[in-house]
Length: 382
View (cartoon, one colour):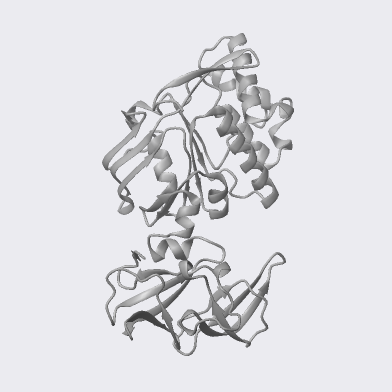
């Protein structure tokens, strides 16, 4: 792997392209639009060469983060660094940064070849250099087969890859930014696009940052997941780590389809054992959590796929009892929504086929339970 801000020469079909990667760093960044606070005191580092996905609900601040990386917006407080260099909005986009917007902005009266050549021609590159770079970029983006096609005839995924090919038609590209590249595409197009983007990142090596509302897409694409909620960074880490070990109930309730079950409860201490009263059940905490005292209000977290029908002989302290209220047959899985006694504040989800109004006795592996503090929503170490 290259050091931040370094470039390497890679020969593609006889064309010598300088491919780079750079670390992206936010230090205490806040941003307002009129009277609305969009980002608040953001600290975030995206390592050099990473493929990072910014995931969060609409309006959470993902696009604003991208716009500040490429210099389109200036933070009201704090600093944005690319490759160790501050981004100054008044000087335009940094030379090593390219951004592909949700609207791909292709020129429909040009073919794909002309779209890739156009930025190079505008920059004053000679015809031979323009032809070499644009063809090499098409190979890297996997769109050579589309060379003479009109953008009007392309699918959403193909148009997005052409827009990426145009963005990388330059020497020394270090950071590639994509803002909701397939917001309106269907599932099959998105799956193909993910494969092609992963391949492009592996062969090109540039730091890549994708903003998306689609958490499945984010988890499938990224080696670094950045959860953005309410203008702040809620959690960062590998997709698996963030999904399995959310830092807060906010992250737990956002990630996953269905999201993690969150059961409110109260800590009790009986017979020297620490447990939680959940609904009508008393669940023993295994392994014991740190610093819990009787009466503490907590939230128990269990993913839907971690719940199973309890086999005979399951310890009473590792079961919860509920009643199925609704069933959704999704083909590959069946979701059963259920409530926990009279104290349940809503419904919860598991992936077992049970008829409505059926009584359920559910269990889970001991190391699958997570605990959060009810007052702060923060995870409790176990």
